[in-house]
Length: 260
Image (cartoon, rainbow, N blue to C red; front, side, top):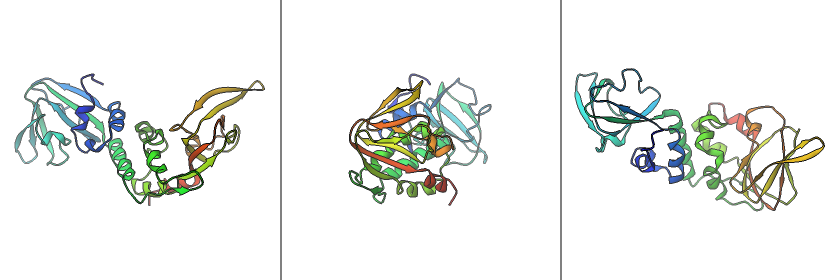
C-alpha cells in the first residue's frame, strides 16, 4: 500500500467516515492505491466490478453511457463517494492530471459497515450470567473476533447480514475462575470464546509435559476452529485468574450461516 495513504484520507470518505479510528486503521491494510498518468483510462484494463473506487488525488473526466461527460475533482464533495455507484454506467474515463485512486473490496466494506451498525444498536442484548454485562456485546464487536481480517477471511466472512443481529443475541457471558480449563486438547470443539476480563494460558502436551504456547488477556479470542471445522481441539486453555468469557455456540453459528 502507498505510504501517502493515511487514516485522514479514509475518514473523509463515505460510508467509511462512520468508522472508529481503530476500524479505519484496520481498513488501511485492505486498501489499494493506484497511480494513473495523465491521458490514461484507469478502468480500461482494471474495472470497478466488486470494488468501491475513490478518487483521492487529481482530476478525472468520466464519459457515461448516455454520452454526457463530467469532470470529477478529488477535492469535491462528489469524490467522497465511490465512483460510479450513484451515476449511470461509465463508458470511459480519462485522467486530466496525475490521478490517485483508492480501491477497496465491496464485500469487505459492506460487512464492516453492517457489523459496525449493529454495534450501535440498543436492542442487542447477550445472554447474561454472573459476571456479565450488557456492554459485553459492544466490546465483543470491537474485539479481534470481528476484526477486518476475520470478516474478510475468518469464520464470519460468509455470514448473511440479515442474521448478524440474531447471532449477537446468542452470545453468552459466563463467569470463570482461576485454574478452570475452558478448552481441553483432544476434545470436540463446541464454542468460540472472547476473554471479556481475566487472563488465560494456552498449552499443548508434548513428550509428556505441558508446553506453554501463549498467554491470553482481555480482548483476545480463541477456539475459532470450532466454528468452521470438525477438528478436535489442538491445545488446552486454562484460566490464570478469575474473569468473564463471552462464548458463541457452534450449533448457533452453523444454523445462522444459512440464508434466512
